[in-house]
Length: 140
Ligand SMILES: Cc1cc2nc3c(=O)[nH]c(=O)nc-3n(C[C@H](O)[C@H](O)[C@H](O)COP(=O)(O)O)c2cc1C
Image: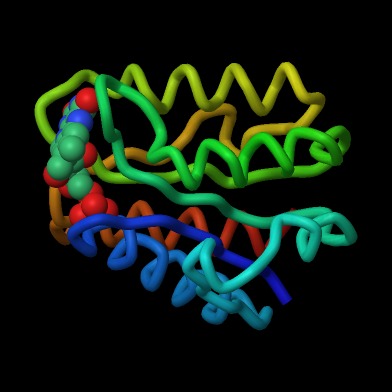
């Protein structure tokens, strides 16, 4: 079972999460898509592979609730493979670069060496990239 935990304001990151789950399932594994308010970070502690999604908020920041969630994940992230993803609007992806650095500093491997970002709602190309991320998660 691969958990895809996300936060969203207007649904774009949820659309990405659903496509990632499709990829996981296409590759033959189970996936669960959950909003971070529905789980506690400690549920991921025994999982070696999972995905976290959050759009660019604030000024190139994670949403505050996701920031708190990620701070919990950092405590046990060493050795895990984490797929990072999220939607953005007008920036250049700085929030994701900072998030990647944070997870790597905690000892995690960031899947594909970088987070998957998509501008606003995913188009067909972004949907395909999400599906590929799901397949890659399933193959770790
Ligand atoms: C309060 C707020 C802050 C935002 N800050 C940024 C930002 O710093 N950089 C950026 O590229 N987009 C920013 N955006 C745009 C969102 O990241 C973008 O609309 C994204 O698609 C929202 O994803 P969601 O539908 O998953 O909530 C911001 C949007 C809002 C509402």
